[in-house]
Image 1 (cartoon, rainbow, N blue to C red):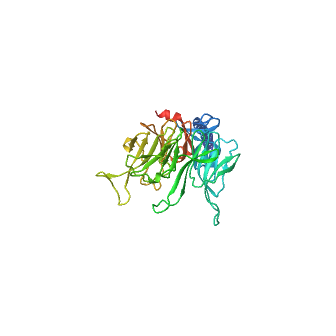
Image 2 (image 1 turned 60 degrees about the vertical axis):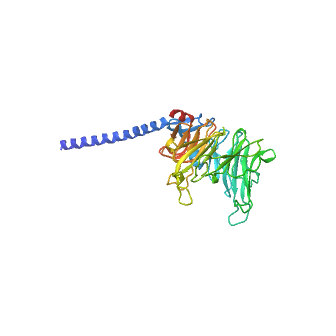
Image 3 (image 1 turned 90 degrees about the vertical axis):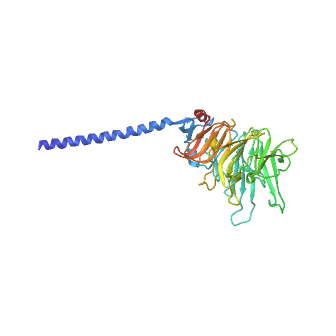
Length: 400
C-alpha cells in the first residue's frame, strides 16, 4: 500500500511540475514576441516634421504608420500638401495627419470631390461636383471651395472646371472647358487655361486647341495633354507667357494608349514630360488589329526633355503596367523634386533614368502622393500589413 501511495505521490509531483513549467513558459513566449515587435516599432518626429508618428519599419527606410487616427479613418486617398502636410481623404471627409484633435473635415454628401490641393500657407482647396437632391431639380455641376476656419467657402461657381493645379508659389491654375459637342457638324467646345488672380480667374494665353489635363511648371510654362486622343499622330500643347501662341509637340513614337487612366502623363517641376502607354503589336511594320482596334502589346515609357523623346520598353526594365487580367488598368506616375519618376500600379517602382528600384512587393496599392521632401506616402495592403505607409529618401539610399 505504501509503495502504491508513493507511486501516486510521484505522479502528482511530476504533473504539478509540468503545469508550473507550462505556466512559466507563456509569459516568456509573450515577452519574446513583444520584444521582437518593439524592435521594429518606434515613435518618430523626423518622418513628418513636427508630428509624432508611431511607426513600424517593414523595409529599410520604409514604415507603416500605426497612428490611431489613421486606423480610424481608413482613407481612400493621400494628398501631400506643398506645406509639408499629409492628408488622408475619403468620399466625404478627410484628415490632416498628426492633427492634435484628430479633426475630420467633412463636406456635404450631395457633393462628389474631384481634386484636393494644399498650398504652402496651409490653405486647402477642392473642386467637386454638386449633385441635385435625389428625385428633385436643383443646381448641378462643378464647384470650387477653400477651407476657411473649419468651414468651406465657395469662391466661384466653377463651371467647366474639373481639376486644380498648384505651383510652388501658391498660384492656382485650372483648365475650363465649355461649349457644344465635339462632332465636326456642330458647335465646337472651347478650352481655356485659367490662373487665379486678385480679381478671380484670369485667362492664360489664347484658348487651347484641345481639352485634357493641364500641368504648370514652377516657372510658369503650361502644358495641356489630351489623354483621350493620344494615339497614332497624337500631340501635346505647351504655352509660355509672352509666346505668340500654343506650341504643338507631336509624339514622334507611335504608341497606342490601351486606356488613358488617371495619370498616364506627368510633367515634372523641371518641365520634363513623362508618358506611359502600351505599344501596339506590330507585324511587317504594321500594327496588328482586329479590324477596328490595335492589339495592345508591351508597356512603353517615354520622356520628353524639351527637345527630344527618350524611350524605354519592358526589355529595359519598365514594369508591365497593364496585364490581361486588368479590367480597368490605371497606373499612375509622379516625378519627385530630384527628377526621379515614381510608378504605381500593382507595385511601386522608382526610375532615375537608368536604374529601377522596387518597394513593397506583393502589396495591393491604393492612393498615393509624393511629398516635397521626396517621401512617398501611400495606402497599401499586403505582407507588411494594411494602412498608411511611407517610403523615405533613406529607403532609396539603402537600395543604391
